[in-house]
Amino acid sequence: MKNLLILLSAFSFLGCRQSSSNSALQKKVDSLQIAVDNAYKPGLGEFMSEIQVHHAKLWFAGKEENWDLANFEVGEIQEALNDIPKYCADRPEVKSIGMITAPIYNIANAIKEKDENKFTSDFTVLTATCNDCHKETNHGFNLIKIPDVPPVSNQIFKPQ
Ligand code: HEC
Image (cartoon, rainbow, N blue to C red):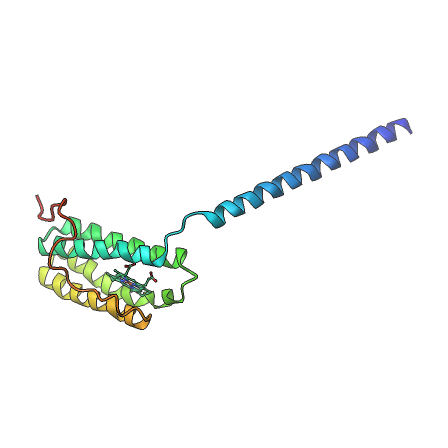
């Protein structure tokens, strides 16, 4: 009988410990959830501003036939485009993003083939597609064009 009492009290002690560690765990989960909800997430406009710079750099890299740099820039655009559905799932405009897949694929090929003429025509199509999506998503006032001057003065676009 004494042994049984000891056993029962041991079980209830373990039970308490179990539930107190469960609630500590729940607290931890709740605080992590708050941290995730408050974590910085780039917005669609930020991705677009980033793409805008790479789009301009891509042009000067291609014009200078700096194919390594052009390849890098198109990769940066691609990365941002890949992240958009992940981080901007709340934006209905994201469903139009697919229209840019083929133009990106084509210009990436022009770069691989080091074909300057193809690069120029593919860049024109790419730029038109930026605007097609802007029109489709009621952002036609963000009108993109082929740049006249490099977006920065502290970078060399000519291959060295
Ligand atoms: C989903 C289709 C879509 C595609 C494809 C697209 N955009 Fe956008 N773009 C948008 C939307 C939507 C906005 C408005 C974002 C916002 O609300 O901040 C935008 C905004 C912009 C802005 C304004 C950003 C700012 O905050 O000032 C620039 C610049 C831009 N896009 C450049 C580009 C370029 C360059 C390309 C092509 C390489 C491109 N976009 C392709 C949908 C698209």
